[in-house]
Image (cartoon, rainbow, N blue to C red):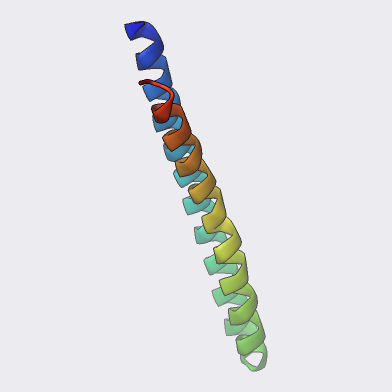
Length: 78
C-alpha cells in the first residue's frame, strides 16, 4: 500500500512540475516573440499585446489542469 501511495505522490508531483516547466518555456518564448514583434512594428503593439494576453491565459490552463490532476491523484490516496 505504501508503494502505491508513493507512486501516486510521485505522479502528482510530476503532473505539476512537468506542466510548470513546459508552460514556463512557452511563456518565455511567447513573450520574447511578442517583444520582437512590437519592436519591429510598434504600430501593431496593441494587437500583439492583446493576442499575447490571450495566449498566456490559455497557457495558464495547462498548469491548472496539472494541479487538478494532482489533487485528484492525492484524493485517491485515502
